[in-house]
Amino acid sequence: DSTGDYMLISPEITELTTDGLQVTFSVKGASGQELEVGTITNPLDASTFTVLQTRTLSSSNYEDIELNIVAGTDSYFAIRHGQTGTYDTYYIDDISFNVLPSCITPTNLAVSNVSATTATISWDAETTATGGYDYFVTNAGTVPDGSTTPTGSVASGTLTASLTSLTSETDYDVYIRSDCGGGDKSDWSSAVSFTTACNTESLPWTEDFENAGATPDCWTESGGEAWNYDTTGAGENI
Image (cartoon, rainbow, N blue to C red; front, side, top):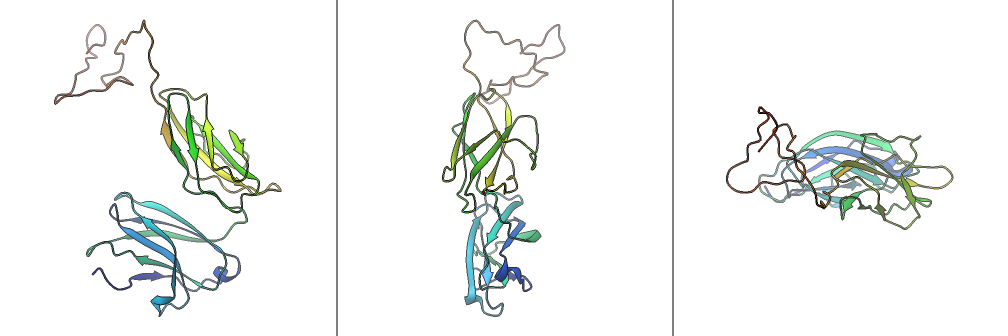
């Protein structure tokens, strides 16, 4: 059915009207399906539902959703079927409710303009970040915590940062957090991963195919048949 209101509504939550709420959950469907998330005044009256976020799924895997809801008049949390198709199905798991923190983690961290040694990061504005934003970049798999020294910081209102002096052909993780002033910092965001590009080689240059039977980094293959890499002879060869 692609008409009507199909909603999942929480029990009444007092903090929605007093402190605000931070909600996280996981959802799986098909790419392109939509899910509406918000609050509702009367669970028996769908017309009192207020949409706070419409999420379009980007894959058929579980995706994490986080929603920060400031205190208002509605005392119920609700998820509504987006009805983008007649037979759309959603799988929802691990809904977590917490009091809205005083300092909120920025959302939609993204990486762009990746080169061999540089990249650009961006994120959405967070109103509580009166002291700006900190970011942390690592190629060692380090997960930052409250004691981690940031790689860099930007002022409030700045929503991009340039990463420099990176190493080519390297996997990196980047994190972002809000600085809300007076020593109040948000939690670090989830990691966004990226890989720096290959260097432009200068002559003289040799590829020795010491690559354990796989395509060497920064080489690509084309055509209908794959190349074979021999690791059993006197030396690796193609």
